[in-house]
Image 1 (spheres, rainbow, N blue to C red):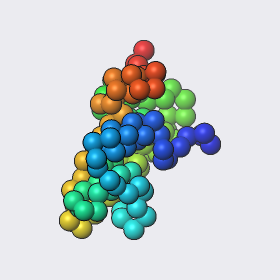
Image 2 (cartoon, one colour):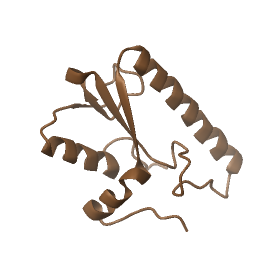
Image 3 (spheres, rainbow, N blue to C red):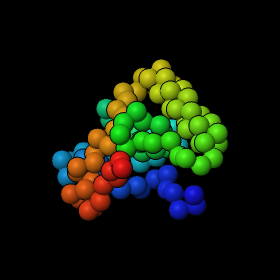
Image 4 (cartoon, one colour):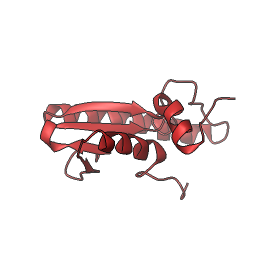
Length: 121
C-alpha cells in the first residue's frame, strides 16, 4: 500500500490538464479546506474531488470487494465513505460548490490519455 498515491493520480492529472487547457486556473490540495480537495477554484468557490472507485467504495462495475481480509477492507472503505459524506457536508456548509468525479466516469478518457483502463473481470 506504500505505492498508493493520494495526490497526482492519473485521473487527477487528466482532469487538471483538461481544465488548464480550457483556460481555468486553480489551486491544488488546499489544506485549509475540509478533505483537502484535489482541485480548488477560489474565484468561483468551487472544488472538484476526483475519487477512485475502490478507495471510496463507488457502486459501479469497477469496484469489487477484496476476497482477502474482508473485515479490514469493509471497515476501511465504509470509514472512507463516512468521512467523504462528512467532508462534503462541511464544504457545502462553508459555501463551497462541490463536484465529485469518479474514476470510472473518466475511464475512456484515461484509456486514451494514458493507455490503460481498470476493467471488471
